[in-house]
Length: 188
Length: 154
Image (cartoon, rainbow over all chains, first blue to last red; front, side, top):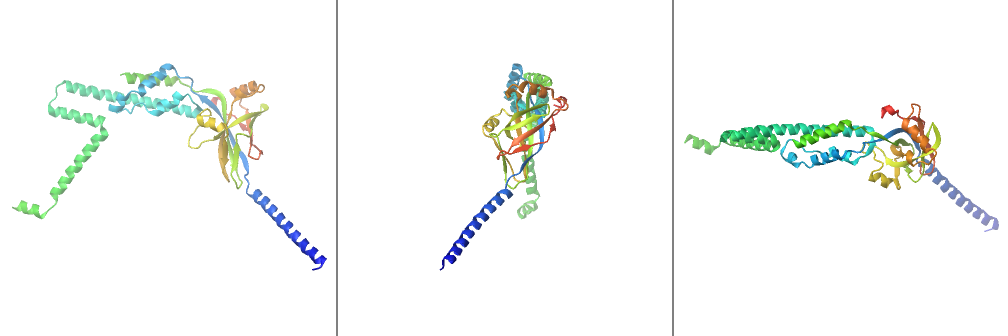
């Protein structure tokens, strides 16, 4: 191979290497440019932060006392003093105003429901106590207990009634079926 | 009955409870990403708010994404404290995210602390603000000038 031929081969090789490197760099840059994030701020809202002023010691004591009143939770219609009624207020959190307004409203309605339910409970208790004071007959006592159960244990009462109805239906179905043995017994 | 009396006391007390302004502001910026890769906003890079009534660049603190399941953010809650030490908010490719920042005039140097405190307390009818956020490449993302809500609307 002559010198010029060797030089040509070397030149071609160098050109190929340079072209490859150039293409790799261009490809890399193009890829980076095409697959980059492009952030922009569309809209901004400014919201003043609000907070509930420090709650009085009396409020905190009363809410704690109400929360611990398990007697009503167990026996009454009232579901006690639910979690959302105490949580946010006792945290004295700083939130957006609409959230705080909503929390106060929820708390008020929780308390009002609690009061109403307890009033109903007290009425029923008083009525039952008055009936028991009159020394009721066993039949009347049974009715009182039935009424008590339906008011204070509505779910259990319904379930029990449903079980009894189902049992009665099954017996009825059994009796109504015409079986050969039964027919034979009836004919005999 | 004692429980009823307690509940009635609480109802009466709640009638008088009114939320009060803290002086801090949440800045909720909706950031759009029209690129092909997720974008990032980080708390280590500075973000600013500029009021039309005060030329100072007021630093705002990145809290985190806003509105993911809850309608509010408590900037002093445990999660916010953790996020402040290195919060990163990802804006998905071809998507948008609302990001919450906190402006607390009480931590600003003097000036402009007093001037800004007064401006934000009174919230004048023509008070406007624009934010300048920094993306992960330290590029400025500037918003339009937008109105502050009036004091009576709070």
